[in-house]
Length: 213
Ligand code: AP5
Ligand code: MG
Image 1 (cartoon, rainbow, N blue to C red):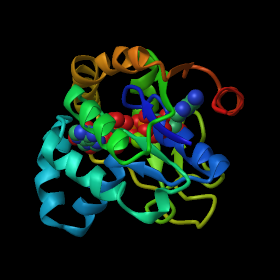
Image 2: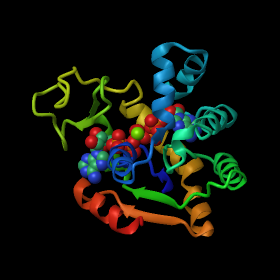
Image 3: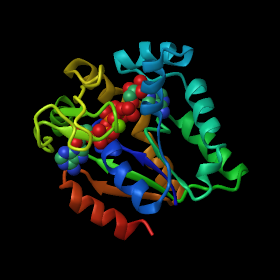
Image 4: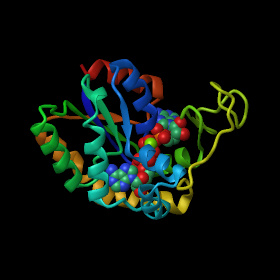
């Protein structure tokens, strides 16, 4: 399966990407995670991206498109892929569509996760993640068994630099202006599948496995 995950910040893209990539045995490619990795290592790409990410703005299209094309040129996408957080602008969506067509790897689904702003703010302010294995928690909705520590490897959980109310508001505004129009883009392509992301994670996952075949 070749699919992309669409949806506002905090809709659950990263959360569902884990289950989907396991179930369909495909790599999970998150542009946000790739940028955070580069920020952590202090690479030139990371330094450039950080300035945008800290403000909740989008990293310029050329940089992101290059990053994704490079990633999709690796061998491990033969069985499919799951893009999380890309595309986010019409220019990115068009570049991806053309690249996939040219390379004989057409996208099967655009998975759209829908959730209102109030819920998103609570989800993002409560999010914590494991720096070692990447597992995502939530102090309100999915707390770890031992406060502040990962259930899997015991590492101390961290909070993302851009997970503060001010930046969340801007990320949501940017989503509505730049990314929400892609729902229509993919509807017109005939590959849109929308899910109500206010539902429980397990219930949503079941619906996804039944729908995405
Ligand atoms: P990115 O990392 O993609 O962040 P985002 O889009 O803001 O989305 P999030 O990761 O915050 O939310 P999510 O939908 O993954 O939610 P999650 O599953 O974690 O991008 C960060 C930045 O990088 C951007 O602002 C931009 O600067 C740059 N960037 C990245 N890609 C780019 C691109 N293509 N172009 C330009 N710039 C780019 O869930 C959130 C919380 O809610 C968790 O705690 C989770 O446990 C909880 N939760 C999830 N689902 C449920 C549920 N159903 N019930 C209860 N709790 C739930
Ligand atoms: Mg995410």
